[in-house]
Length: 106
Image 1: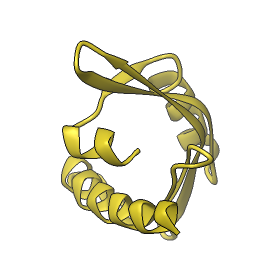
Image 2: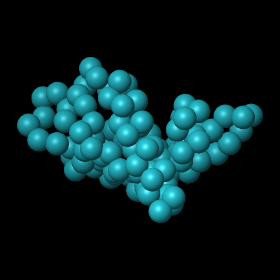
Image 3: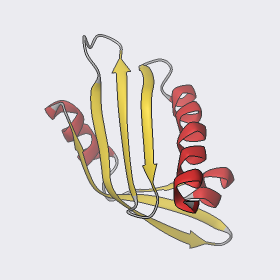
């Protein structure tokens, strides 16, 4: 029960945050966080695409250093081959610092 409530709050905040980040490219329509399994699923409507694109972060890793939290994508998939290739090139193998609110809920 605790995970479900926490994950719902995290998903709502993450959706708002990501929509601000990608506003020039489109918008996140749905976002689901499963912090227990370390999995995130989202559907995006991107400019120029006629239908939603599904993206799944199948596994992520968190690391805390110097009072900061970083996330790294371990495995991911997408419903479009070009998106899958872009994620492998730009997400996998990199760490991203999380905002403090995100670190608290993931």
